[in-house]
Length: 320
Image (cartoon, rainbow, N blue to C red; front, side, top):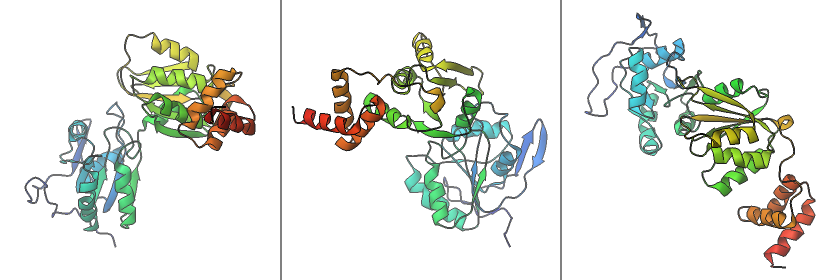
């Protein structure tokens, strides 16, 4: 039988002493609600991506009742906890301390305690270090409980108006231009809609590269500051979106970029390349890919025969 009692033996990392008892309550619209006990183990809790009302009652209960709370940035999470009157004292868990603190958290849960894991916003594990902790917990036979809620990727997808029956979440693209273009070239083969995260200072360059690779008339959406005061969802072709954002004095906020599925992608601008452009494409691809793979990727982009492109590349590499 699972012991559902709260653990009173939690040790405070700052002074090595047991923390003062805190009430496991949360407050919604002025009403104080006593949190129900939760199961020992790891509870992966989704939090709002902007609007603090986008929190589930179950999430509030877990945050209030958990024996310990781990988060990316304690200052960010504190704002959410204060909003709902939760007295938990979060401990930081991020990419810089994950290797050191993971064994401590595992031992804490193995002792029969509950741990809630949150990210700064949205669903943990999507582009944050929480994946390591979940993998370690599973390897240690610790129960993992998903507590679903807000997700920027899904919010952007459903607001884009593009196909949502089949999609691929690709996270952040590489920062360097060539690596970014190579990644977009691979993503073009995905049969469904592609969902990406992008920074405001790279979004124009990414749109321009996507227009070249996916096709200027490919339908897309740029979802900025979702659920926040300055929320914006711009829809159109990649060509239109590139021109629109390039003409702005500044772009701010977190961005979800949605690239249309196969039926939304006209043939790319890599068709009808000149001889010089084709040679440059082959050489660029061969810098990061083996010759056969570079030829296959060039064939996919240009529509030309893969074997012919392979022999052409080998001739270029020999200087012939």
